[in-house]
Amino acid sequence: MMNYNDFYSESIRNPEGFWKKQAQALAWDTFPTEILKSAPNGGSHWFADGKLNMSYLCIDRHIEAGHGDQVAIYYDSPVTNVKATITYLELREEVSKLAGGLKKLGLEKGDTAIIYMPMIPQAVYAMLACARLGVIHSVVFGGFAPHELAIRIDDCEPKVIITASNGIEIEKIIPYKPFVDEAISLAKHKPERVVIFDRKLGVDIPQRNYDVDYETLVKDSEPVDPVQVAATHPLYILYTSGTTGTPKGIVRDTGGYATALKASMKYVYGVEEGDVYWAASDVGWVVGHSYIVYAPLLNRNSTVLFEGKPIKTPDASTFWRVISEYQVKVMFTAPTAIRAIKKEDPEGLLLKKYDLSCLKYQFLAGERCDVATLEWTKQKLNVPVIDHWWQTESGWPMLANMVGVELQPVKPGSAGFPVHGYDIQIMGEDGNPCGVNEEGYVLVKLPLPPGCLLDVWQNTQRFTAGYLEKFPGYYFSGDGGYKDEDGYVFITGRVDDIINVAGHRLSTAEMEEIVASHPAIAECAVFGIHCDLKGQRPLGLAVLKSGMDISAENLEKEVVQNVRHEIGAVASFKQLLVVNRLPKTRSGKILRKLLRNIADKSEYPIPSTIDDVTIIDEIKQVYSSKNIGKPKKQAI
Image 1 (cartoon, rainbow, N blue to C red):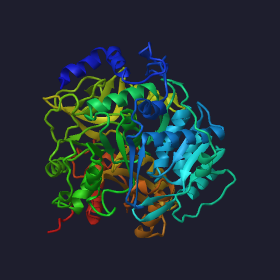
Image 2 (cartoon, rainbow, N blue to C red):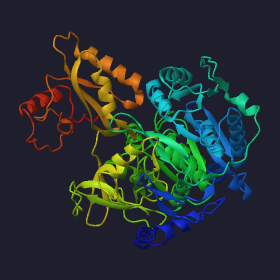
Image 3 (cartoon, one colour):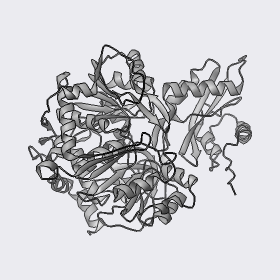
Image 4 (cartoon, helix red, strand yellow):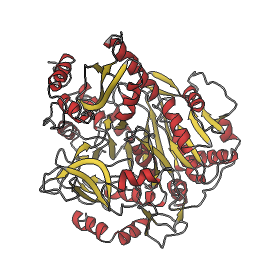
């Protein structure tokens, strides 16, 4: 085991030498000679003159090395009672034939395709098939409503959409095809084809003239070989919530991403080739891209593709069954999942049904992990429980306790230390470094390491304005935090209007626009408040227009339904309170942070700019009447 300080310092002191060595772990078609250069947008290009193919690295390379019979994917779907094991040889056959079918539909290197699918093997095949052709894929989480899908269609202008007949939410069937058809009707851009995988679960599939049957397409196609692409060629676009309410298309490159992911499996997660690795997430999120699909397959691991929930599929023992059944060595999930399990089985009795001796490390990320959840998990699993922090923009961990380098004492509440390549600093508004335990902005000194965002799709100005301009020479993460006397970094949360609901980044600005569109509402505010289960949840406050005759109950029902229709159930918007007025500055700005702090019972110095301090007592009374901020009584 190497020394963390020496390893990390080398990555900061000599980034080109460090990352050139890491790149040698990949099978390049053309190994790069130009390791790092500045990009026109103010970012960085890694390995610019290198050439490779991600699908080849994830599949063909391992077969050529004699590992074709190793399991690549364990598919486990408790919602359909289906299990499957897919070897690397079988994966290549599925991916190469689907790629052949997509090529027959006219897709070629540089084109874009949207993938809107549940957690089924065909979603992984579609991602890898696009990568095989050099087609830029954009996976859209299946929980998003047609309106959200339409926004993404217009932004990335896909030639093809790949979808399935339906998804399943525990026992509820979610028909995907009608959502896709509605999204296409809403979008200005019209895809040429929609490829549909029929799960044969009795779901009605509306027929359109642009439809193509997935199985027929694959059956009638010839397999294709990987297409060579430049290291800087975009692998995918992944949309993340933006402060304007309009999603940002984060663009990821190929060579830098592959290099960073391969290294992260060894150094961050302590996973060796051939191990079984499980990230309990969804392919629609960055965790699914990086650690369900690309990183495990790059590292010749067996990855678990799980279609279910931590509870109710069928109960709170599901995670432990999966770990035991597939001999998972390292698992990664969100704290929300652990809290749900803890709520159902507080004593951990269901865990005792399974032999979990195979599990070496449990990682948590996606949202801030509270101390109680971390300690409960550690006590019940009796393995190191590692909280770590990263973003859609980074694509791989930025802060962690790197178990493959030097496992250091876990400090509950902290996300650990900077990961190799990330020169993380805490600065105040004035751009000066913060002192020990002094909260400030979390920044990364440029250049960013390989694997981080290349740009914002078709909007470089938004990339530079959002990430590079606020603190010149640094990447602005949008999060606040501090370092303690031992160098541990603590992330305190977003400094903008993005909230984290069960690991899903959502824009309150977008929800606010939908709430404000209701004809009875004069003005409103939507912000995130603490939630014991999901970490955060959105809360809306609304002021009615004069003379409006609508009950608060009916207004709430209508607005909740509007948000659900426009964004989807993933928004978790369930509560709207009617108030007489909203606290504002003298210039008219609504004090959302004050509203949140009052709800969370945090300290809130009364701003000197507030127009009327008496409104604070009014808001407190409204919160109290709806039990906002009051701890729920524990069952005895």
